[in-house]
Image (cartoon, rainbow, N blue to C red; front, side, top):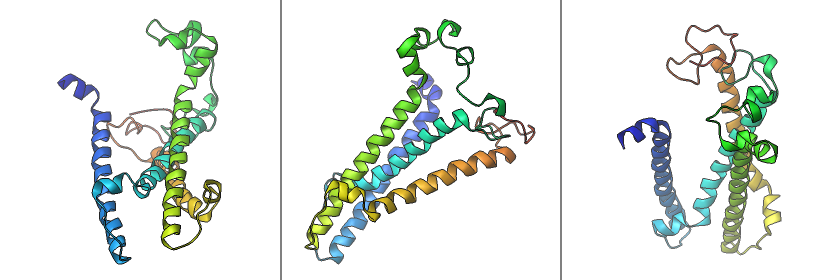
Length: 224
């Protein structure tokens, strides 16, 4: 168990942070929701009722979809686009998917390579793009979940105010939906873009996300 924890400490660390933050969001959101209910002269709800509601689901999903969009686009963009001097980029002359030898697939795969990297054909093609495919599917799934939970919450609010409900298509095409969506997207794009550039000039000793402290600014594809 100790060895497992050490070898997986990075994922376990972020899993712990995720669960703690999700619990905190549920508790804080529950309090804010009940405050709003009281302000409108309506009944409060239990924590369980809140975390199974569309209001909580929308709040969670609109952040999940933006995070997975960020990583999906980053995986895709770094195939073709480069940033000289950034450890998050390939060397300028290596832009593109590269050769089979560079990717270590087919006859270039080593004895310990995954089976689908060695078999060739459709399976190797799928495995060669499996990270992008899975990240993209998670993004689409969480975006759809955001749209459904947001739509349900929107219609519930419409009902409370005696106004007509809208269709899912109508909600997805509304300014409210895209305002909530784009406010997350713009922050994710800014964070990734600024990190790519800042990593050219700044360092963090011991982090693989940084170049070695003494590496030249123009050195690309060099990890610490």
